[in-house]
Amino acid sequence: MPYTVDFKNVSTTGLESSPVADALAGLRANEARYYKNKYDHVFTVQTAEEAPEVLAYVNRVLSEERGLAFAARPLEVTAFEAGGYKMAYVFYESGLAVNVMYGIEDGAKRAVGFKLSQGMEVPEELAEKFKFARQKSALAGEIRGSFFVIKGEY
Image 1 (cartoon, rainbow, N blue to C red):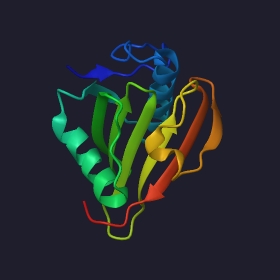
Image 2 (cartoon, rainbow, N blue to C red):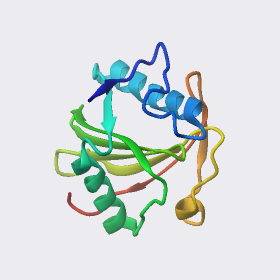
Image 3 (cartoon, rainbow, N blue to C red):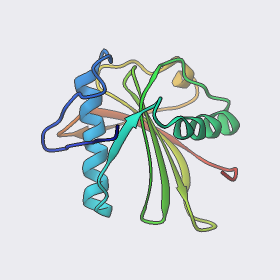
């Protein structure tokens, strides 16, 4: 059942099994606020089991572009279009959030982003391959993020 993320009253609903549930909920709320403010999009998520096609899409992009697969359990996913982009997110139990931003128009930006919740370690799968920038968030505390540009067609 889809869950509408409330960025005014942050909730750990759906994320309770994460060791950094509060920080991950803040990160998810931070994303919800961004899409509401920039595109007037209401950010809803559902369990990874309810939308296996979203998880499969993100996994395909990660695997084909960089040979990545995460050991952490996926908790929630979402996919939507906003501002000329197809967006897909996976929120993992470890506190990791992965998003695929895929510009619909030829030549538009296409990238995969990684965000780490405050309190989590850099996943082993990313530790040697990516450097993470830090950003402060009123909702999520400190978020560490990195990305790579998508070269293939998806």
